[in-house]
Amino acid sequence: MTYSAHFRIWRGSAAGGSLQDFDVDVSEGEVVLDIVHRIQATQAPDLAVRWNCKAGKCGSCSAEVNGRPRLMCMTRMSVFTEDEAVTVTPLRAFPVLRDLVTDVSFNYTKAREVPSFAPPEGLAPGEFRMQQVDVDRSQEFRKCIECFLCQNVCHVIRDHEDNKPAFAGPRFFARLAELEMHPLDTVDRRKRSQEQHGIGMCNITKCCSEVCPEGIKITDNAIIPMKERVADRKYDPVRWLGARIGRRGDGGAEV
Ligand code: SF4
Ligand code: SF4
Ligand code: FES
Image (cartoon, rainbow, N blue to C red; front, side, top):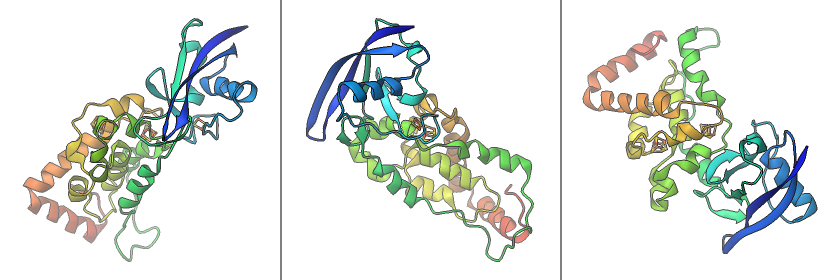
């Protein structure tokens, strides 16, 4: 079964642009990315769109569909009525390169600012047995596909370009939490979370969790626990120091 849908796609560059209208056939079972590809194949061969896996796993095809940040390859056409116009625009928090393609290098800069996993020196393979509870805790964060939809929707940078230098964003708060919750990591990520990564600017609106295609509870399971750990460290440094010494001495989990 085929019907004709009305698409409005933003076309342009950093210098400016506008929505361009397309009427295009849609078949049963198709997703927004299929339709964008059909437009590219039949009506606008120079339409720029980034994609790779078409399976919700590479994180490349992020865009705003009818104003909501989504993966185009995971957005079924059946969520729209046949007479509803489907508007596709580039991610708003990042600079446009061309059409639907944005420059997301802000996120790579932020990724580089997070120190990598740092186990105790001299720990040989097999000397530490990780508890299942610790595996489970970080497993959720490791599902991240780096689509940056959470970064795009966060009002701290979406609406305030000047906050970008001081704010890592939800994807990297999840990364910081993943490392902080690892029983062998020796870096003080709490102090850094506040002073270098700006976690204090997050006011727990949960918009990031709502758009995450992997269903990661970024706010509840990463940001709030990190904020609590930041507060613990700030107001009880003796407890923090004792926990770190214990962690290094016996390889055990942090209290
Ligand atoms: S919960 Fe925090 S990080 Fe997530 S969107 Fe809201 S302000 Fe941004
Ligand atoms: S946390 Fe979720 S929304 Fe954010 S980049 Fe990872 S997969 Fe995408
Ligand atoms: S094309 Fe890979 S997530 Fe959509």
